[in-house]
Image 1 (cartoon, one colour):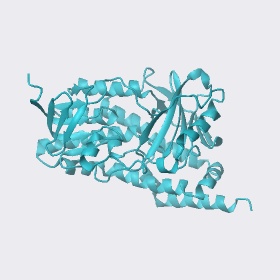
Image 2: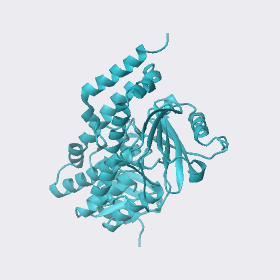
Image 3: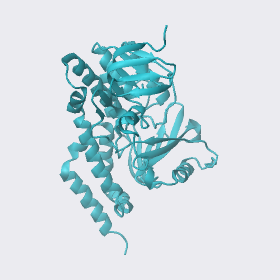
Image 4: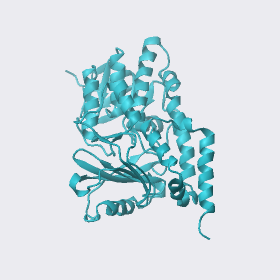
Length: 391
């Protein structure tokens, strides 16, 4: 067989993380022929804290018919909000967060997309992407063509590079470092977010069934030495380890740098490739699954009703974009100098701020629900904290 002969599909999906698998399973269930393409075979490792929020849990059930179980998830209801190691808020009965290892979680989503009918091409290397056809040429010479192409291939998306020349400006997005530690190294099983562990970012401690994830991430340009932040944060939680010798993993995180028009023509971007990562909480899994579902629905609508895929996608994704825009405004309020120095005091004086943060994480509140009145209230509380500072 001539390897250059093109194989045609209704939909090409590049990347089989939560966004790509959501797009593939949605489109396959709608009757489309789907090629699911990835550089890696599954299971594969993925840098991520692995926190599955209430919003993620809803989308997981809605898109994949997957619900938390003891095999993949560890429920966590104890939460601690800290600032540079100092506790500023704590909840013993917080809305549940399901903790998972991305290696197993992503493999389960991928398997469900395959069960729905998606044809897998993995592991493969890509030699060319034609965004006009659209088509993808594999390194072995095979050509895959589609009527719609969805790029769900992460922060360094090859599809975004084919569209725009580069995926994102590294200076404007985030960068994170993390390590998996044995459970016995840290006895406290509480989920922790530290808003002072990095500039315009945070640190995290997420317990899992077999390990505990410790990491730090923030806007790249504001953290020229992220390794120093990581070592300092690790030393707080595992002082018996030599932080200099611990091997951590790093990756770019496009939180807050979302594309207002995620794609062009018959090419759509979803998940990290579209910058759909919450700029405050760092959550990307929920928006990955939801944007992937939207992209799969848009592809099906476009092909079944002969309409532009981008129009169908934009009609759906506005909700996520509004959430991104609102979160960016709040992030600027929280992290702006000199407010950042007095934010911890405001949180300590007003426990409702921690509870509201947890409700956002749980998906019980949207940023749009906060509205201008709540933003003004946060600003007023921060202002009161500034006025109380020592002379």
